[in-house]
Image (tube, helix red, strand yellow):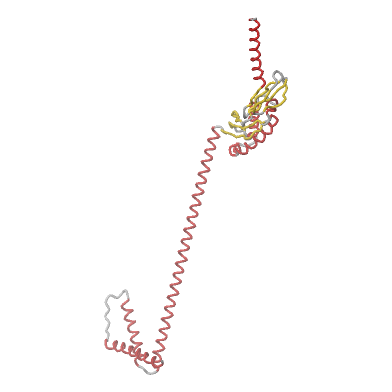
Amino acid sequence: MTILQDFGSITAIAAVVFALVLIFLMVKSVPQGEEWTVERFGRYTHTMTPGLHFLIPIMQRIGAKINMMETVLDIEGQEVITKDNAMVHADAIAFYQVVDAAAAAYEVRDLERALSNLSQTNIRTVIGAMDLDEVLSNRDIINHKLLAVIDEASTPWGVKVTRVEIKDLQPPVDITEAMARQMKAERLKRAEILTAEGDKQSAILKAEGVRESQIREAEGRREAAFLDAEARERSAQAEATATAMVSKAIAEGDIQAINYFVAQKYVESLRDVAASPNSKTIMVPLEASSLIGSVAGVAELARAAGLGGKGAS
C-alpha cells in the first residue's frame, strides 16, 4: 500500500512538472520591438508580433528572434583610391531597420556582416569614380549615392536602409600639406585683390573730390566775375549819367561843371601818386583855395541837380 502511495505521489509530481514544462513550451510572450519567426518541423510558417502567443510543443518552435528597431551599423574604415589615383581613408556609418522578419531571417546569413561588406564595396565604387577634390567637397552627393545603392541591394533581405553617412575622409599627409599651402595662397590672393579694390576705390573717391573742388572753385570764380562785371556795369552807368549831367551843365554855360571835372581828375592823380609803391615822400605844390573852390563847385552842382529834380517832379 505504501509503495502504491509513493508511486502515485511521484506520478503526480511528474505530471505537474510535465504540465509546467508543457505550458512553458506552449506560451510565448514576444517583447515590443521584436518579431519571432515560427517553424513547424523546421519549415517557416508565420511570424509572431509583440504580445502573447501559443505554440504546439514538439511540432512548432521559435526559428529566429529579429530586432525590428532601427539599428546603427558602424562600417569599418578602409583605404580607397580615387579617380585621380589619390589614396583616401574613409569611415562610414549606416542606419537600417528590418521591415520583414522572415526575409531577414531566411534570405541572408549574418545580416549585419552582409550589410557591412555591401557598404564597404559600394564606398569603394562611389569614391573611386570621383576625383579627390570632388570627394572632399561633395560628401552629401556621396551619402546620397551610397544610400540609394545599398538600400536597393538590401531590399530582398527585408531591410530598409534609412541613412548612410561618411564619418571621416583622410587624404595622405603630403596631400593635406599641399592643400594647406594652396588654401594659404588662395587667401593671400583674395587679400591682395581686396587691397587693390580698396586702393582703387580710394583713388576714385580722391579724384571725385578733386573734381568736385575744381567745379566749385570754377563756379565761385564765375560768380565773382559775374558780380564784378555787374559792378563795373553799374559804375559805368553812373559815370555815364554823371557825364551826361555835366555835359548838359556845360552846354548851358555853367562854369561849375568844368570845375567838377578838373577837381575829379586832380584828386584821382593825387590818389595814383600816393598809391605808387616806389614813392616814400611826396612833395606836391597844392593850391588849397583852388581845390576848395573846385569842391565847392561840385557841391553847388549837385545841389542844383537836386533842385532841378524836385522842380521836375
